[in-house]
Image (cartoon, rainbow, N blue to C red; front, side, top):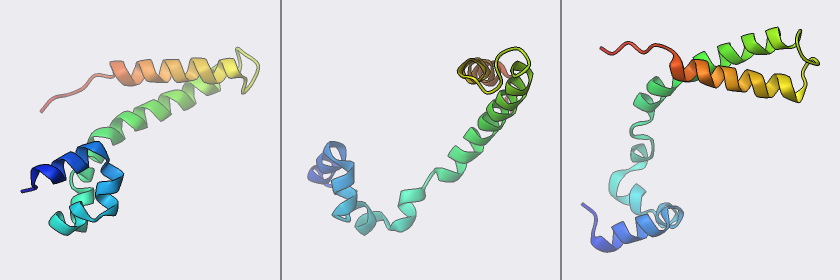
Length: 92
């Protein structure tokens, strides 16, 4: 339980709060990484789909546009983002 002044410090300047050791002092070093595991589990599949789609699109578009041009990168990124956002998600 933090006091009101600690919450105000944390909200107004998180870097100062960390530098002064308010979080480390109260919660310990592990508190800085709390929630990282579940976050990575949620993000990793999305990033894997994105990079696989980007790589595939880039290979195909290098035959259509000038190889490794701005157009290839921009269109590949757009297609990859669309694929990532429309990929079917199975809810458990």
